[in-house]
Amino acid sequence: MAQSLTAKSAIPAGVTPGEDEVAHLDLKQLIPVLIGLMLGMLLAALDQTVVGTAMPHVVASLGGQNNLSWVYTAYLLASTVGVPIYGKLSDIYGRRIFFLGGMVVFLAGSALSGASQNMTELIAFRAIQGLGAGALMPIAQAAIGDIFPPAERGKWQGLFVSVFGLATIVGPLLGGWLTDNGPVLGSLVTDTTRWRWVFYVNMPVGALALITAGLTLPRQFHRRRHVIDYIGSTLLIVWAVPLLLAVSLGGQTYAWGSWQIISLFAVAAAGLIAFLFAEFRATEPIINPRLFKNSIFTVSTMTMFLVSAGMFGAILFLPYFTQDVLNETATNSGVVLTPMMLGFMFSSIVGGQLLSRTGRYKIIALVGFAVATAGMFLLSQMTVNTSNGELVRNMVITGLGIGVMMSLFTIVVQNAFPLSKIGEVTASLSFFRSMGATIGLAVLGSVLTNTLPTNIENNLPAALKKIIPSSQISSGLGNPSSGGGSSLQQAFAKFGPEGQILYQQFEHAIRVGLAQSLTEMFFIGAVIMAFGFMLTLFLREIPLRKGRGPAESAPQAAQDIAEVAPVEPVLMD
Image: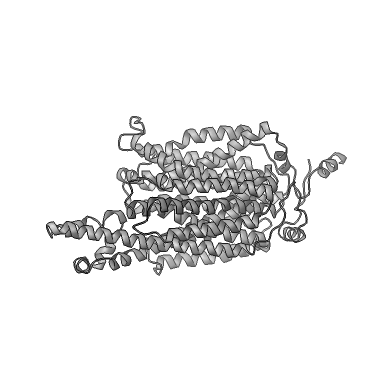
C-alpha cells in the first residue's frame, strides 16, 4: 500500500499512470518515435492526393463514371466519423494500439482497392482505407501532446502539418507517374491497369511506417476505470453520415430541395438531437458537449472549421483556374499547387517555432487569418488576363496564411485541457476540421455548378446566344475544359469555315465565365477567412504550459477544465 501511495504521489496532477511514460524519452529514443509518427501521417496524407490523377484511367478500366464521386465520398465519410471514436479510445487504451491498428486497416484497404474488379468494390475498399486513415493523423497529433509540453509542441506540430503540404505536392506527381509508367506485373497489373500502383505504392511506405512505429512507440496502459460509449458512437454515425452525404450530393447529384436531400438533413437533425441527449448522460462521452463550456475550445473549433472550408476549396479549384482559364500546360494539381504548398509548409514550420519561443498564440492566429484573407481576396480578383507571376504571388500569400494556423489551434486546445483529455480534444478538433472541409467543398462546388452556365451565357456574343440554347450550355458543362462537349462541336461544324471562329468565341466565353464563377468562390473563401479573423478576436489567451501540469496564472482555464474534466479515480497496481 505504501508503495502505491509513493508511486501515485510522483505522478503530476491530472496525469494517469502510463500517460507520463512517454514524457521521459531521451533524444536517441525520441527521433525514431517522431519518424514513426510522421511516416504514419505521410501515409494518410499521400493517399488523399495520389489517387486523383489516376481516376480517368480507373473509370476507363472499371467503368462506373456515375459513381466516381463515391470513391472520394466513401473514404471521407469513413475517416471523418472514425476520428473522434479513435481519439477517445486512445485516451483510454493508449495511442500505440490504435495508431498501429489504423495503419494495418489502411494497408488492407489499399491492397484491396488495388485489386478491385469493379467500381462497387473500389468504393467499398476505399471506405476500409478511410476507417484506417481516421486513426492516423489525430492520434499522431495527440501523441505529440503526450511527448511534449505545450510550450514545446509548436515546433514539432508545425513540422508534422508540413507533411500534408509535402504530400499535396508529391502525391499528384507520383500518382501521374505511376499511372503512366508503373511496371506491368503479369495479370496483376497490365498495361491498361497501371493505375493500381497508386494503391499498391502505399504498401512499402506503410510497411516501413508500421515497422518503425511498432518498434519505437512506447507501450502505454492507462490504468483507470472506463466505460465505452457505444450509444454515442452509434448516434455519431447516425447524424454525421447523413449530413455529409447531404452536403456532398446536394446541388450535384440531387437538387438541394429534392426529397432525397431533405430526408438526409432530417435524419441528421434527429440523429444530432439524440446524440446530444445521449452524450450529456454518458459517463465517458465520445464527444463531450461540455467541452464547449471552455471558450478556448469553442473558438478554436469554429475557427478550424472555417479554415478547412476555405483551404480545401482553394486546393481543389485552383487547378481548374490554372488549366482551364489560363490555358497552362500543367497536367496535374501537384505542379499547379506547388507555390501555395511551399508557402503552407514554410509558415507552418516558422509559425510553430514562433509559438514555442513566444507562447503568444492569439497574435499569430490573427496574422494568419489576415494574410489568408488577403490571399483569398487576391485570388478572387484574377481574370483570364492574370499573369503566371500574379497567380504564384496570390497562391504563396494564401499558403502562408493558412499554413500557420493548421497546427496552432491543435496546440491551443491541448494547452487548455489536462493530459488525460488530449486524445479526446485533439480528435474532436480534427473531426470538426474534416466536417468543415466537406461542407466547404460542397457549398463552393454548388456555387460553381449553379453560377457557371449563367456566367457563360452572359459572356456569349448575341449571335451565339441565338445558336446555342441555355439548356445545351448547362448540359455540356460536365467538364469545363471540354469546350461544352462534342454535341456543341458538331453544332458549330454545321456552319462551315465560320464555325471555327464561332467555336473559338464560345471557348473564350467559357474561359471568362469559368473565371467569374471560380473567383466568386475565392471571394466566398475570403469572407470565410475574414469571419475566422473576427472569431479569433474572442480567443482567450493563457500561458502555454512548460511542464505537464495545469497552466500557470490561468484560474479561469483551471475552472473551465474542472467543469469538463472532473478528476477520475486511478487504479494502482
